[in-house]
Image 1 (cartoon, rainbow, N blue to C red):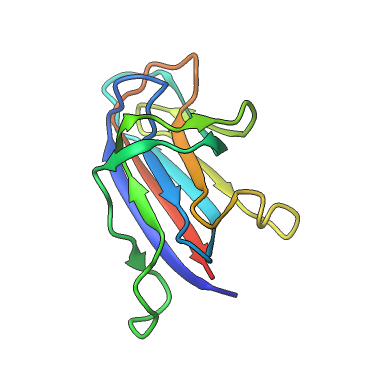
Image 2: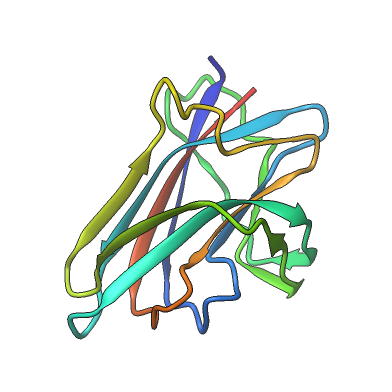
Length: 151
């Protein structure tokens, strides 16, 4: 078992083609998503969705990094994985992934890895994982929390 970290972002993405959070593994390291939690903070009742997927072509010129917080204890090392919330060129995501749905007006959605799916969203040696609004939705204010394991 590796070290676990938490990444949180309150975001109102402009569209469904921009990542809310991108997780990039460090060289010679693995990062895997263990859980994604989404909470609606919108102004009206509307379907919301997040797509969690692997990245086929990495993004260019990342920005808006979020420093992952240690989840287990203070003695664990700082994360070597990096995050991005903006890109000069967005990552190109794989066609398929997991969609999490909830209602914008206070709803809650989640995806949690199980024994079967642990490692399903794993990045190695500079690969990226994408969390962005699902197509067919109009994103409203939301709180996104991601739990990542690194080893």
